[in-house]
Amino acid sequence: MKTCQSSHSDSGVESGVQCRSGAGCVGKCSSERMENAAKRRLAANARERRRMQGLNTAFDRLRKVVPQWGQDKKLSKYETLQMALSYIMALTRILAEAERYSTEREWISLHCEHFHAQSYHHYPGQKLGADGDPYAQRVLGYHPEHFQAAS
DNA sequence: TAGGCCATCTGGTCCT
DNA sequence: AGGACCAGATGGCCTA
Image 1 (cartoon, rainbow, N blue to C red):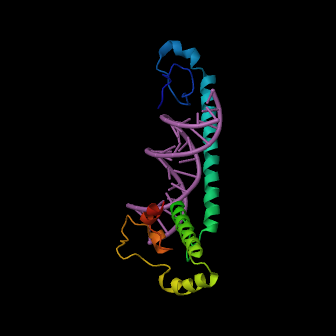
Image 2 (image 1 turned 135 degrees about the vertical axis):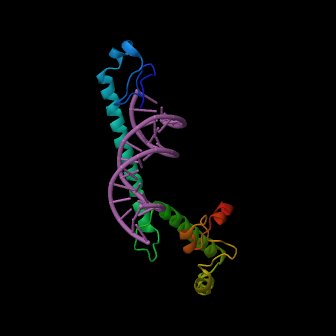
C-alpha cells in the first residue's frame, strides 16, 4: 500500500492510497487527484497490454517462419527464440558454404553427402544436461557457445 | 497436485 | 510530463 508522502506533487498517487500527512493534506489529496492517478494507472495498464499483445503478435509471426518439425504443440516463447536462433545460424552456415564453394555443382555435391550423415551432428563432448538447450540441440545442431564464439 | 506457461497489473527507470 | 520498456508478483489454465 502506497502513501502520498511525496509532497503531493502528484504522480505516484494511486487509487486506494492513504495520506499520512494529516490535516493539511485533505484538500490537496482530493478525490479528483486520486481519480486522475487511477485514470493514469488504467491508461498505463492498457498501454502495457497493447505492448504485450504486439509482442505476442511478433512471436506468432516468428513461429510461422521457424521450422517446427514434428511439433504439433505450439512452441513456447522461449522455444521460439531458441529455434529462430538455430534456424538463422543454420542458414548463415549454408550461405557461408555456398560462398566458399565457387560452383553450384560443387556445393550441391558437398551437401548430398553432408546432409545425410552429418547435418544434424552432435558434438562429442557436449552434454545434454539441464543447463543445455534441448530444442536447439535437437534441431540444427545449434550450440550457444559456438554462436558466442562466432559473434 | 506440482510444474510450466501465460496474461495482467504494478512500480521503477529511461528517453523524448 | 508522459510514454516505452522492463522485471517482479500474482493468479489462471493446462498437462503429466
